[in-house]
Length: 420
Image 1 (tube, rainbow, N blue to C red):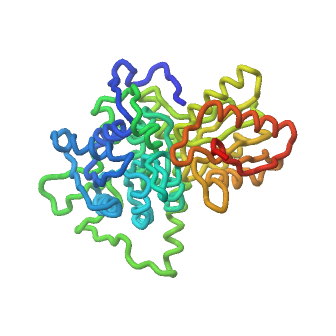
Image 2 (cartoon, rainbow, N blue to C red; image 1 turned 90 degrees about the horizontal axis):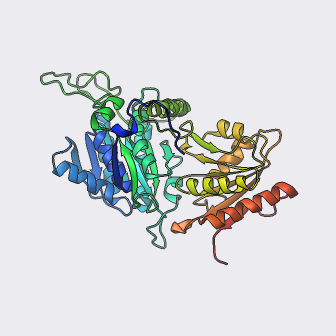
Image 3 (cartoon, rainbow, N blue to C red; image 1 turned 90 degrees about the vertical axis):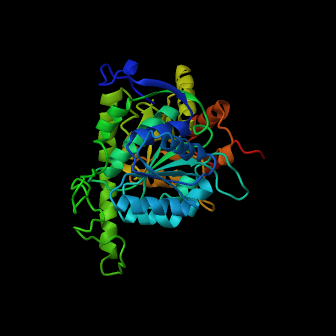
């Protein structure tokens, strides 16, 4: 959900109206973000991102080292090396490709490297499925990456640019994954407004590093913690039980600072463009007096909000919260918003087999210490790209409203839209 501002620094008429799909929007955002290194390996539904960026490189539109690698494992490894040397690094992947990066995801986060990764969310095999769910993103949730989910193509563009600013903030210095739903966003055309190149450059403060012509000590002092022969530094040495625990605490403390930085960047983007997404962390709608609230991630947020508007026009007290920042998870913020709500429906486009949906487990934790806890129901939906139809979501709300009346949850884990 975006909000209009009266006087953005770059008014809409001075922004560039373009019709692009989500993958192209991410590629354009990366192009404008003065990326030094892009490591690329294709996988549906992400391929268009690196394919489009390769066109920018071939046409001489960017000064980027484009590294076509032999696997996603190598793509993230190349980004690790580039970022450790002070470069601004970017790559993109999906599903099984993200799974192949697993080992290096942990390394990138533990080395505190501000890499940006676009994930066109797709179901993991087997059986082979190229369509959308969040099983890939849920799988990386414990790796130490910041994870942001977007609702539409405009937000995919905006958030990719914001991701570099968040990642490179010295209070953070952690990698960021921008999640856009495969096909629903990656391949769907939308009219969006882009900023002129120079405005994005100003927003990010230019290149991550400068290149003075003649200097032995040639790395920019503004880039902290980089490989520099003049100031030797080790990245990723053997770290046993005598110090490993303390180094993990550095990551934990950095994660604590992320929501503040995300909010600041969201507000700065609002001042610049007239667009913001809730407070950057959560996007609530109709929650203030709601008896029933549904939480959701990604593109389904728009459909849920549509149903909330429809039901509110009929007098039902319902609301929704789109979780934009999934890691670090906003436990306190959600608990504050859901305080006093009777029933919460948690929509998960993925499941932890043998348990519940991952966001349901986090929300259960968030609400545990409330004196009067809402009743919780987990709705797993949309696996393998199955559509979340408005009628289905309306039926879900009516079930939750009935639970609010009876005060009884007969089935805590439900499967929305599955054939029986």
